[in-house]
Length: 209
Image (cartoon, rainbow, N blue to C red; front, side, top):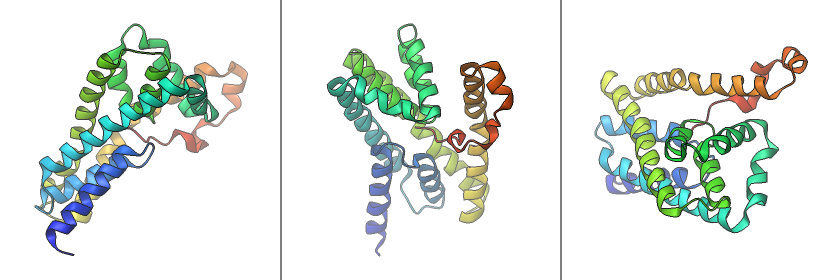
């Protein structure tokens, strides 16, 4: 495969994972950041592609929420972790809409849930689009530059760079994981919370975006 074809394929993958909900966006952006540090990908185009796809996905999900309303929201209540994220965003959306929509991107499925919820609640599209653009930009820069930093620190050793970057990402995801555990304990009756081994729940694996 020629270099231009390789770049096009990589950017296509970036667009795909940014646009399709719940695909592993963070590992892909980190990997592309590592490749950008070694000169194999253009960093600016990775970032631009990722931001564009994430914003477009938000607008599509906003439209889904606006058209389908509560049935679309009900889909997120079928698994416990998305339900907790949904309740957290919904409770705070009226008071601090833009900061919540931006910060929610670091929670599992937070970007998708926030977009569908805003559509179902008829949240003003202009305000949502602005918050989405800011949140997507910060999120995509965070993930891509994290990979780029790992590539720089590892001095073109790509496997080591990936390990370093993904390790840092895992550490940085701990606050979100702790937050979800705290939310779950509050949602459970006291006696159930004592008996439940929360750490064994696969829903609590952090998947941000």
